Image (cartoon, rainbow, N blue to C red):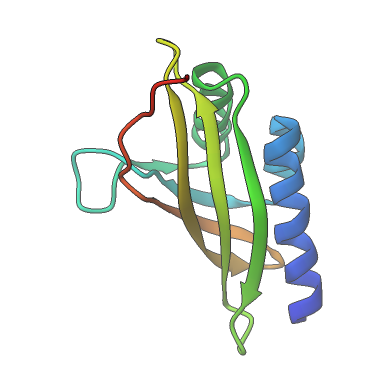
Length: 131
């Protein structure tokens, strides 16, 4: 797959996140997909594998953060089109009324024109009080 097509894939993926559209997200994912979260006990965060488990994890994000947005998206693809990066600013209100605003990146591995691995990294900024 060419770089331009993968940029479009990441753009579509980003749009689906901001629309909270789990099925559009999953349409971008490879059947053997893996999601490595920003938090967890292991060095890689929590590793979630397979379409059903990743679908559930993505759905849980929208339940935890009903107003979540990934703003100012920028996307890059490696020269060999095996890897990609998306840079965004994550914003959301927490269940207790706090505010999260932190820069993040996702590092992607592609297979067969789909996202095989979504590896998420986010700045560890304290939750802010809403004024």
